[in-house]
Image (cartoon, rainbow, N blue to C red; front, side, top):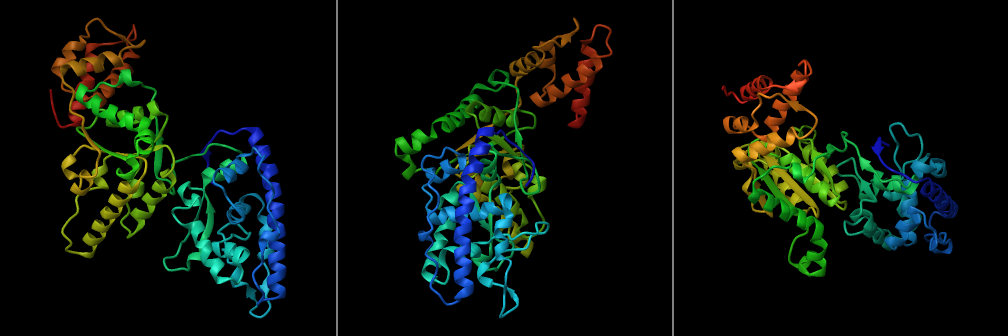
Length: 458
């Protein structure tokens, strides 16, 4: 289990432990009965596990019990859920599946299961759940498929999934994988926030700044405010006002304009204002030259974010959502299929997606048509630049008497990001100043450095 940021409560930890201990004892009874019945009588009817009722959780206040009640999980869901949890909390309970079929001198196919790379215990699959819940009853086996539909709470709330490594393996051969979010919830009671990794190529971004620190033109602020209002009131709009039957869920916006004009800061402030985590997708980790890998990498992020209060932020999005080309080769066809897949995932995502680019013209038109808003972040004019200079020096960092911020704003057409770099350089130089003040010369040299980056000279 990868490291993650989380908060927890010791009372939740102990209440979960007590609830799960009862659940494990119930599962052990079901497993023992199923194995005895199967091994002793291969052609017998399937086990009626309703004869072994699960523990009563109606008055249990543990996060595990609350989740069971919240989603109305019945006996089948609870058995699948505890089965998925066992490798993490009591793996020895599943050792009973390590028994050979005397006729074939190998494990029983009906038990399913996978071999882990480092875990020496039994890793259950959907086949394992089918054995316990359906036995040899094909109709009941087919009914179990509903537990793994996209419409089921297991999938919709990212509780657990059936995960397949191979392309054409039977569906029930997929591993029962509980999400880290719910593994935390059902053990420590913690709130899980995934960390950047190969399996989750996104980083949570935040800011110490507030709206008063954001310097944008009025028309830009109005567009940004529309996004914030949607995030705050989309439940009212979609549910209470009944527009959910006509409008697709979610909100998609394109931020475009020169670098350093506030696109990333704006996304961070939107999330901060509505209490939503903002995750910035690392395109270097997502995009792959291997067929199918880009889609797979992006799916990890979308699957985890689908029913959480997250904002997904794609910076330099034209690298991922660029224009489709004429299909003159298999590589072109693959690239176009990749873009089509991304388009569909973004369009179907029920949350908020913000794409940012310096070059709007590079974004595929099919994406552009599906944005609810397109917000242009222009280079700041003189007055906005003056506000930027004033805001950044609104602290204990002192300016020498020869610094004229209005003159800097009028003379040098810099974006906010470039101004911050100039100020950082000036502050570093000020450390050596006898009075520790930022001088006009410090700032002028910093401006020269910034303009050189863009191939410009004073």
